[in-house]
Amino acid sequence: MARYGISMEFEKGDLGRFNSACNASVRNLFRGTKKATTEGCREILTDAVRRIPKYTGTAADSAFMEVKRRSDTALSYWAYEGTVGFGGNGDPVNPITGEPASAYVVAVHENTHAVHPNGEAKFLENAVREYMSSNFRRAVEVNAKDALRRWSD
Image (cartoon, rainbow, N blue to C red):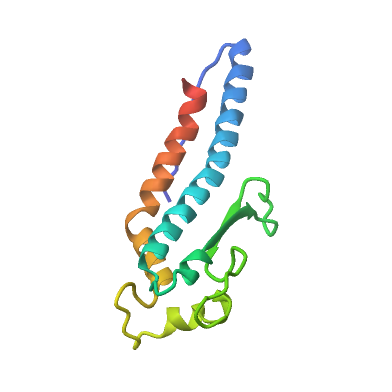
């Protein structure tokens, strides 16, 4: 097993400033997770709304997102989770059928045999897959660099 180490020398008075800088960078980095989670959810939801079949616009109008702290981890004050979906946002009612979007949006998402003149089935799943394959890494890198830059400037 390879072992790596680092050795640093500080003037006694500089050690406190170094420790403060390290603590600040960790706080900023984890604050960046909320920003990254929010931006990721927003990108996914925007793409999903673009992809959702639109007849009356009711399903698209039911789009929602929520970002909150995770409570199931020791780092709950730094860890965030995002939820994006449809059938929320007041659950608007389709003016043609009289049904709330939540009553049919899952069926629209899952029915891959339906023909949609505009939009597609799996609109949310495809948006998530696209984000994970092309945008996730970029978002993490940008937000981590931004968070770390705050204390170094």
